[in-house]
Amino acid sequence: MTVDYIPFTELLSDIIDNRGRTCPTSTTGFPLIATNCIRNDLLYPVFENIRYVSKETIETWFRGHPEPGDIIFVNKGTPGRVCMVPDPVSFCIAQDMVAIRADQKKIYPKYLFAVLRSSDVQTQIENMHVGTLIPHFKKGDFDKLLIPVPDKKTQEIIGNNYFTLSHKIELNRRMNETLEAMARANFQSWFVDFDPVRAKAEGRDTGLPPEVAALFTDGFEEIDGREVPRGWGFYSISECCLRVENGGTPRRDNPEYWNPPKIPWLTSGEVRQDIITSTENMISELGFANSSAKMWPKGTTVVALYGATAGQVSLISFELCANQACCALIPKERMTYFIYLTMSSAVGSLENQASGSAQQNLSQKIIANFTVCQPSCEILKKFDKLVEPLFEKWISNLHQSRTLAQIRDAMLPKLMSGELSVDK
Image (cartoon, rainbow, N blue to C red; front, side):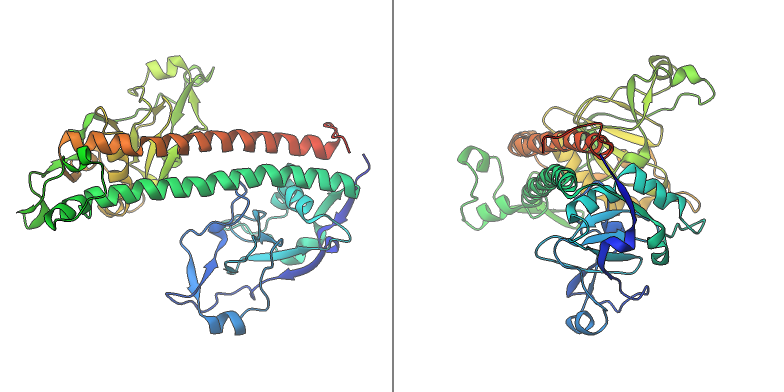
């Protein structure tokens, strides 16, 4: 396969930026995405910690706006991260990134998207970083970035293959957002807004099956100045658990504790408000035996105790152990999802209780004593059974997406090098 290496700028018909400085923002309006919204494991940008701009700002401040099929390219902080622009375009872009538009006479847009994520191009970008604390890939250096360009048919095969797998991963992500929203809506209705209790108190239909509705009381009482359903009470989250415990770390100075790697070992830096389906770290059986860590079962809720992720919450979907900066809430029977949704809904409260200047810290005691308004065990068991199919599908989608991403990322260099031949 013949490949030409062409300067990046020669393959583009347009580069859209917003002057390299912060635009005026408002509390409402059109979403403004920043570099944190661009990730190389996603097809399209995500809306995380976004700001908004007014209609006037959209019309007068920007030099231009992304169009469907453009590629968002991050220049600063995490240079080289790229995402496609969806149709319709539902955002405008902040500083430290640009939208690039492929010249379709010279390069297939989906191929350009794929090749920008290839190890070859990503390594070039990394080698051209400037800045020590905050890496920066200058737009003026775009012409130094050499893009491998095969024949048009090969471009289409590679680009379409990469895009198709990425699109399936994107569909799974969107489905999981819906599944999560459904689970959280049920949690909010039952345990925060007390909708079934209010409906019965007002003589309305709860919308629940009769055997479930019968479990809810029909009135409220006041406990410590708070209105709660009659018969419910305030308990510590630990009373919903078989046990609450921290992980443990084997000594670093013994290589046998880490090799051969065999047992999945979670670190606090991997804990996010999500479901964990894999971990990057492994320890040996000897390392596990020489640590205070215990194996935590599927369905355990994990809270990060130290560092940048302190207070973040995850649900684990497979058996693993963890370092000492993780705290596990191992649930009693049929309390798995109540515990996870309770703690993940309280992330802000947990973060506010963290202390320390150089590093944020939480304690196992703070986690164990976290107070919840708890109904009868029968209600908790019904809730767990109600949302379990949502979580199981969520987990299944995560596993499928991980497999698809591994296939996609393994195929890309083989297709580009010609090692893997595709029927044209």
